[in-house]
Length: 110
Image (cartoon, rainbow, N blue to C red):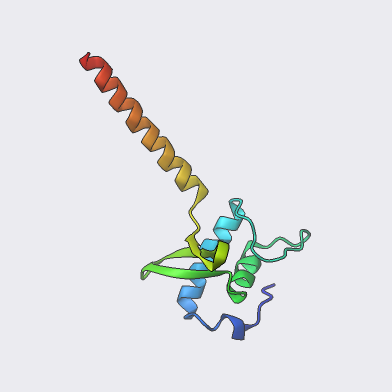
């Protein structure tokens, strides 16, 4: 069941709201910490995402008509981008592989 009232969620167009809620629910399923109080017996990522949107804890940054980034309220009311944990790990691994390749290339020149 979706708990927030429709009036609280009408601040965004329905399509943007759908993209934002889906992206935030995915982040919650992957381990992001909820920004609103959660009943541990009924953990529904979509409901929590909509509650966070209604509470003003997250907002969208529209990158393209079909892509939305989740902005999360951080310290001192600053907004930060909620990145995908898996994406960051993959990026770190790629960077490490590039460094290893450069080191191997330099070692072979010597």
